[in-house]
Length: 201
Image 1 (cartoon, rainbow, N blue to C red):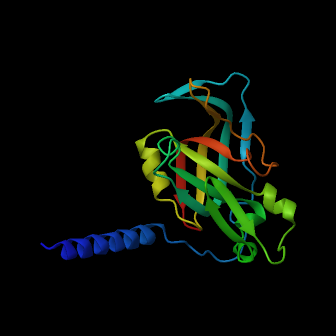
Image 2: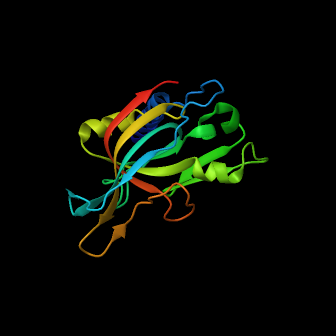
């Protein structure tokens, strides 16, 4: 086979792979209405357990239980963090799970952050900030990882696990947020996911 045919075949395979990936993760568009009325439930822990993931130590800070709408998802396959945290989910609850509100908010994810923009606020700014968050997903095992890989924008997810701090012996550390009231750098939750349930709205 000539080099040109090999190149064409490779391009076609990439296009096909991209199409399949898009189809698997294509967004859902549920009708207006609040899908996840309740804020996440969190029980802080006085003495956290230690969990080992390769050279990373995870310290549990709080038990965490959330039912929320998936506003966006971002997968990571490169970089030092990707093996530990292969996926981020931007999640919304309360009126941030309502399609009528979300239709007026542009949402994106990049470089482990979640961004939103509006032309006019459909709900107060502070409500957007405290009823949505970018969360870093750390799957507890391969089964949970496979479940997380199926998550699509617009779906309703129920996630149970722990908020954790991550550290390495060389001094590297990444601490979880323990409140939904913060914004900016350090405001994301590191979620050690023991269970995930997905449902179409």
